[in-house]
Image (tube, rainbow, N blue to C red):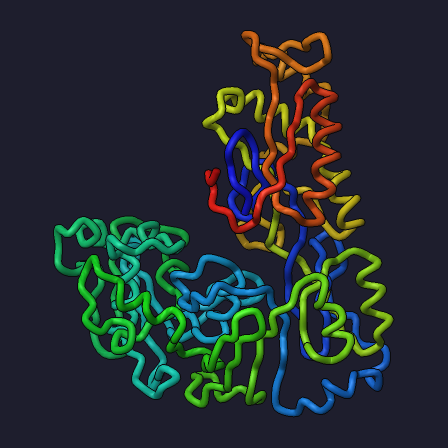
Length: 456
């Protein structure tokens, strides 16, 4: 993520001016990854000549190796700070309530659930005989403990459980109660969650991964998560694989979980190999990895097809990029200026240049493959320089002698903070040209991807 100092920044999470592009995805063993949006035909292009599978891969009988960008080593599903750590936790932990490929909620560790007629009380029934990977039992107490941690005043992860409106949660967080009144363990397999109001996302919020109370909760007291944090690099989960070790810059190793509730995985060992865009094709080509993600440009896809042994899984992605406005800057406080910048940027040209038909302009921060996608009544902000100029005129920004707009003696100049990557390399010249045409001077500044927002 880029830093926000003067005006704008590019980012891959929250939405402002979104450039909908497919970035990441998945594939099967001995396959590469090519990504497309819903505008393309989805599915797997099978290998044309399996005999070309590299000898290195053939000799690997009991292990699957997948490429991954380097994680930070925070292997807790509620505390990770980047998507690569999340990938690791997804191997180690199972969800209480899962999703199917269409985004529908389906049983996970929970066997079933019921919802009261007023949609405020959720009764969740666990599968019998669940255990964590060390063989210790997984019960409703562990689920209640997990939700309690998320309501702890010192919890600073990305999961906002307050959106579930669990009764007593606010009081516990504010130290006005010693426990969360809306969490009741009815028996070892049953948890009742009472909320203060109905919520469309409540089940998804309370249905996340489950932490072991015996392991993570030793000595737990509200307001003190220090011990739990010491376990970020020593995770205990209940997913298909058990964490073995992480060698920074190289790999993360796992072995199959014999206690996994869906049965022991057929592949005994799994490895995440740290790769990057300059190494991942070579590693896949030589058989050192079985599975990786690649850009979806036609040349890259053709290169993968030429290998013969690659199964290419092409499917829609929920990832997107955007330019994000810093509304603390005076010029960008005006909604007409922000709208003008969107109308004045040819986002389709950007996607055509970078993704060559394998991406789509976003009109909202939800991908078309999501159950929540609904574009009815949403302004698509098609490229319209004339409308952009009109809005800037209405906002009081008039063209100066050199064409750059001026208001109250100040020129309309913006700094765009970006990290170094292919998309941004294309964005800079397109945005500079587009916005200069409507009277906005853009000053790009390349910053470190991992630098904190607002850093000097």
